[in-house]
Length: 525
View 1 (cartoon, one colour):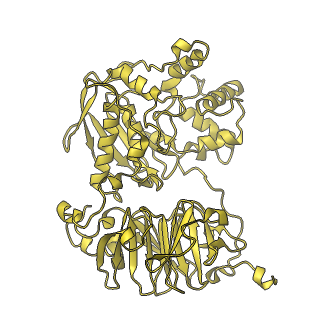
View 2: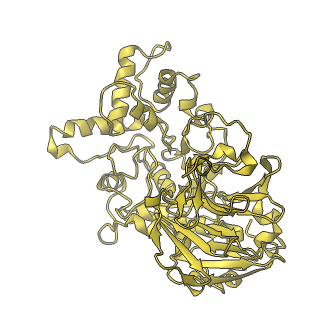
View 3: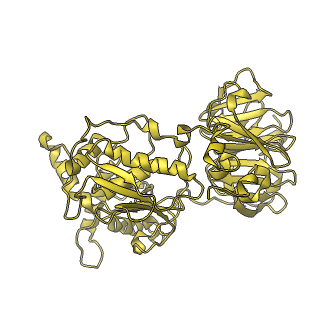
């Protein structure tokens, strides 16, 4: 192979940018305790440990070396890390993980009992003893959803809230009902930044602190509205599991040291295992007793990983609900692409819509009526401008269709060729004649035939100046611009100016997405 063939296949629009080293990934958001050390990891860790209650009463001059080491040890034990007292890389990474904003200090007695239980098996149960005002003295409680993330449909969010309360009712004597307005025992509210809970409790944007709650009987749970909340299992921040955790706090539960517990301090994604661990069940039953109707029913996490699937989009659903326009206009989509005739295809769950050049959307239709053997909830889609073939990506697999015919050899495992698992978005980039796949803060240029990354890829997303990481859709437009989507927003990238030149809300501003009718009245928000 000649030297010319080995030259990196750089995007023409990016030539001459003189790109330098990229930023450190995973940096804590401004306002996060781990971002408050002026670049010094130990100072940042000291702020973090102080915020979450790992220091005993001090003299106001900061912790001594011994108390700092003890706090690090206790944090490492709580986080199931090797206990050394040394502020190593693994400990710092753990401190930066998304978590609940409630301090861990309330769980000290539980953790001490758990340490003792290692030597005394009869003490293995975690019974969190309620403080004064640390539990409700009634079993029928009302709750109210004050507001919700604007990019999520209200009905689905209410389902997630209802399921979060029912999760605890299934294993205790508690019973819950929703108060649509007026006073309620427990109120759930989404806030941004400082919301009058004290500067230490101000939200910090995506990552860091996700939410916090107050023990009975204040009855409040607050959620960071800037998080990429999602009702899907693999997209954004799973709202249901955070709701269920914070509801646990409003019922009187402190953080748990058990690795698989829902009440553990750190965010977790749901799998097939039960949402509540035995530790969670014992704790709630110690406060409120066992279920009044039969035995406790443990529910698997797989029941809650996709609330959209509870009510699949069908041709008559919107008419019955009174919501105007396609359903995706009031929430978000799984993937979006455009063909050579400028027909836009929007994918959500097991259905798709087709939007003509006039901006009118038709559908939804089941995916498999057009693309047999294509699974629901595809994660990225693109159409080749060379031959009109459709490419779909989900998990580690990819599909290629000519018309409605799946080509031989597909689906295939694309990960083995270097394509990332669970890609965020894909598009066919005309100037290169190549597919481009995006994943987090990187992008991959693929050769269509073999679906393998070209040499010197992946590259950092900073090449696309102004495009945020974690986009959920991308497509080119006839004027040469490229549109990127995430949640309810879009970013317009101008090739001539080599940067993002506009941003806004796609459903209300981009008529070619098929949402014009949704904005003419009767919209959900």
